[in-house]
Image (cartoon, rainbow, N blue to C red; front, side, top):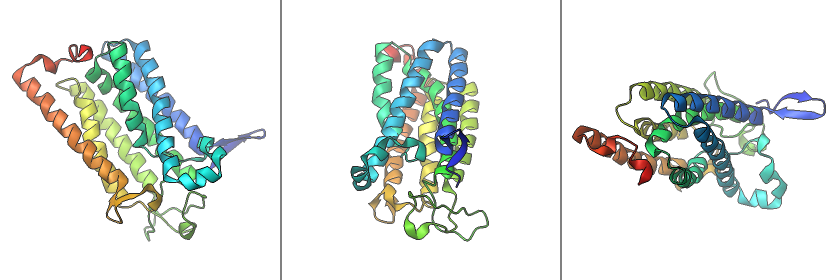
Length: 269
């Protein structure tokens, strides 16, 4: 791990915060280009992106704070030290979805089409964020004898796992998100209906996350069934099922040639 990337005078630039910022900028660039290609109001979508990333970041941080409630109640100032790491990804989408629905309705944006534009940006931002987790020493894996194991010494790591070779689950997920990003861009170019990209994301990411969870070693993330089904895996099941239902519903609309295949009416619903 490498928590501080470099110093500017007396000010440390934390690896985690730096990579989060880079991911944000890359995501905005991707989203603006996809919005222009889709014929959307680029500036309006850019505003939505900015606020969604802030809301999502706050939601991910809030869920992380909830997982370590006792610690943060004893150290409340640490809640705001986000540059040191500490986000629970699913807290982001859970916070953003109601905001996205409200914003889209208020500004009469085509929901499915905008969703297709946003999620590739989300995927690439997530990839950079997970690289930041390596620097911070959070979201680590369980012990491994593999040659590619990483050692972490962060306060975020359980004491008995500090200095032990662990699965670099952060890297596993970062690489997976980069591959998913490429797949989403390919889907965007070839999509048959609005909503195909966003639904593919919400069907694929839960599978990626569920597999990587089997290598995670940070028990603080919580379990629905102790040692068998983590909280993130449980959420993944619900998200996958919900996205699958919507995916086949949209496919049926395309097959029947109904107006639902076009997003113009959905924005005003």
